[in-house]
Length: 475
Image (cartoon, rainbow, N blue to C red; front, side, top):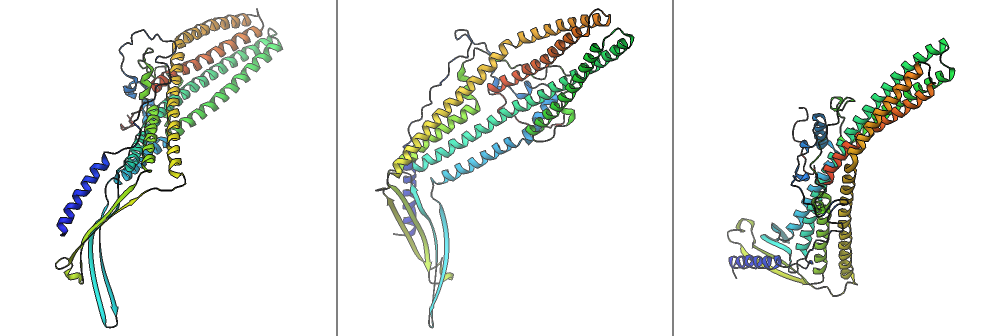
């Protein structure tokens, strides 16, 4: 047989073996588990028609986060956050692993050349050879390598979805921390305003006490409110610093002061995404964290195929073709053509149950992945249902709190006037002042909850998963 004939037959044999191996797979057919949550969210009418609204997940994050300073802070986070950077690197690592497993489906061809010189007394002999071939290429007749390659591919896809989930959570966390800074700015301003007012009252009370129209008890009460207001200013200033530090940490770099909110900002930094409460819960199956869990399940399903294929014989081929000569100078001109073809087969006979244990482990891992997938759906459903429940009553709470402040302001003004005119003691004024201050603090907290809920609704429906920060951060 000539070298050309051998090479042609070898190539045809490899092609046929590759086609045969490519058709085999012993992995069970994948079936998506049934969703373990209701078809509709709690409190919604399943019979009500869903209004036509754009998908929240498809909304560009800049159309939800309206404040330009917040947009720039988010862009900084997309460039500098370490968790997101690790998630991107994990994708590259998983992609490299997939390429390695995919390469095992094809023979690795290598070339080699050698020269040997040996002597015995006055006799010296030389030989040279050059070969091209492949070594121990496994024919994937039962789909073991293909199953491993599919497992690596699904792991890559799961890693990519994890990166999208990290990006989605990052946007929400940055916006939440930025809004928290804004709330503490307002709390500090309110405490400072209260302190200034109490100092004016103290000055007036000292004059009244000196004139004999205010008791020492009243003076002490006013002094206590001044010190309490001073403590609140210091307390909220500390919490503001902590909120700024938390924002810097999640962004991954120090946020410039010019990009921070101020106490005078209105509550319009976040737009309310067009959320349809009657939307089916099946929309959550497209959330990146749920998709990641499903790809992990599919990877576990592919592992079962590899474990099953290990029970069957393994066939590998080694082949080479080349030339040999007793002189390097005549290797390619007058050399002798050589070839070799070595098929081998390994059959599992006794392995002390290791193969069965591996299959059992793969099947148990799949069951675990099913439970984790169902848990991911339940978590997504719970987060969304909670956000919708909060949104349903926020407007009522804000209206009630605003009306309470109006009433408390009227009460405080009347009590202050009666005290200054000597009608009542400062006790009634102090009680009214504390009630008003508490109501104002509660309104700031409630406004933060309302703004944060807007962010949460955007997140739980999958918004921001594909956000990019490529634009310049210094508009």
